[in-house]
Image (cartoon, rainbow, N blue to C red; front, side, top):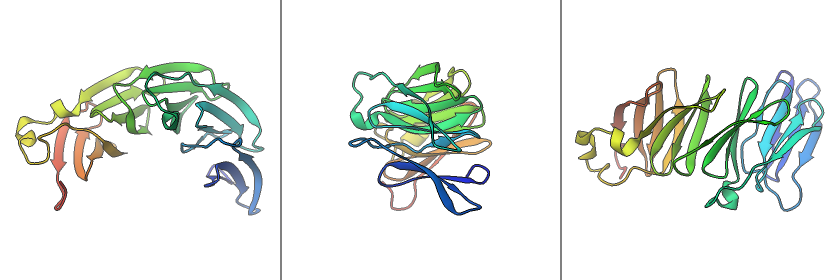
Length: 219
């Protein structure tokens, strides 16, 4: 919800806006035939941002759904079609996309110009924006934090190595640490899980391991 406007996404790959006072749809944008919208959109006070399955990212005017700009994201070797564009997030004048599986880009919200690009150690499993930082975890078990304005890596940790040896000796961290999801961020900590249900906590600003918990019946 942005002011009096509700923005939504349909299962049939359409983006629409609804006037909350009038209870009417003011505009609808439909994906081209054969295309999907594989990511969750993001909004600013003036636009809606999202990506298509072919790697195209777009901005539509919040008031009228008019296309403001579109950009084609170059392919990355090893990325699949379904990894084309991930969830969008907006930080001030930058819209952030996870794209092509192994990179994160920051585009200008005004014209879509590339502001920064960061490559990741592996396929991003989950990511989120909190304050002025973008946090994500990868399939190979890396926990990374980027400055949302510049894309600069603030810290990166191999979670398999960050976990204390005494914890690794437990029954659930003997193997590789991987497949982290989902991710939650608080004012002080980042919480994430690993299949099939283990929970871990790290300091938000340093990536330092804090605790882990294996729920009864997990593993």
